[in-house]
Image 1 (tube, rainbow, N blue to C red):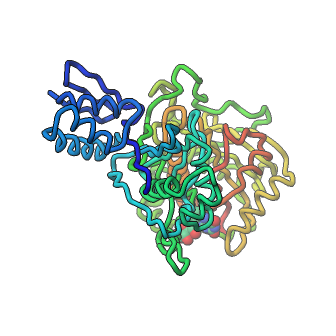
Image 2 (cartoon, helix red, strand yellow):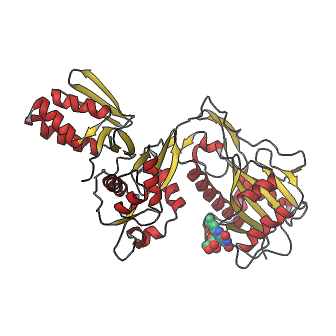
Image 3 (tube, rainbow, N blue to C red):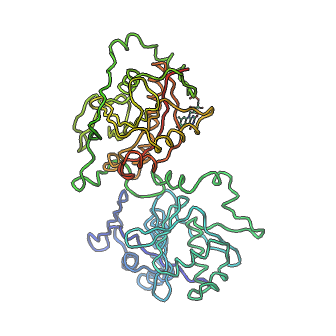
Length: 469
Ligand SMILES: Cc1cc2nc3c(=O)[nH]c(=O)nc-3n(C[C@H](O)[C@H](O)[C@H](O)COP(=O)(O)O)c2cc1C
């Protein structure tokens, strides 16, 4: 006989009894009142906000206190609490809680599913366990709940499910848990979408889903946690470090005194003489064959000025912000331009950082083996292989974004890379240069080549530029 599951309210649910029998419930966007509750229902609410109880015990409590009249209300309220995502389900053995299933979103109602005693189950490849505060939790981007693993036996059951197992096989492996307890645990994991049923012929249901098969674990986790829906973490501007950590400056300080002042183009002249916008859009192409005569310092200067310079700085959103030619969420402007000059007229080979405020290149190093490898990596990413005259590496000063934005900071910085790529493509097309975005790069090698702290400033995009053949 499977052991019953204990119901309780979520820990962070705020419940106030304003007057006798009148309760106010608050949790993030949830805010509701229950009025004139009977003594039996008051007792049940108090049990749920404390240690919790099984549905059967709550039934007994209300029946004993109020009689039959309140039972319908009890079940109605339990149903509503579940719909609101404020009810937790725990497995408790001899007074010790093994695991608790906690809703983390209201997008999907938690409907307890019973695992079959004779069936095999296996852990989902999307399930993962991590430390959250002082607890070990099991989570999955497929799930709208989190399971708190509060006792080693819960973790041991999860660990045993890396291979398909029946409840009795698991309890044989872990003698400290009974077959009934394991089966209850399976029901919790099945309800949470963290295990998959294994068919008699051995096929795993989750693996038979062709759509899911094409999601990698990290992609689905990133997607589900950086958008609203299946979590209740703050999302968007929250300024959680305001008053605690200084945001990085609006413009990165110059990296060296070895400076090349770049030419500024005449924007008024360009406004008159540039090709029309539609022609530029229609002519834009990725060009992987570059000319023998390399790009000039003047062209590189014009390209950077039209793409990336700082037009103005101003205070906004509790920090200093800037105005530049491309759009950027919250005007954080966290992306930095690192330029590997491979061949350029009037600019020596080497690695430079672009100072967008003073329109200068600050030299970091001469050509070395790190730069050769970064150039080679870009070359092998194109067909035909293109050894670029210029390789621009975009790096994010990530804390510029994560200082203000929560849950979505990295997603935001990648979107900014896309915005910049298109701006770079269009400016290069207008200038009759050869542009090509590159889809991947080595952030550790970038950190070694530049001396940047991987966590403070890391590469997120690469872009080839050169003269046309
Ligand atoms: C984010 C992104 C990554 C890209 N990565 C590469 C790459 O690694 N190698 C490459 O040769 N082209 C790359 N490209 C260029 C695309 O292959 C190209 O845009 C696409 O084939 C359409 O052709 P078009 O740009 O000439 O219109 C990339 C483009 C983008 C926007």
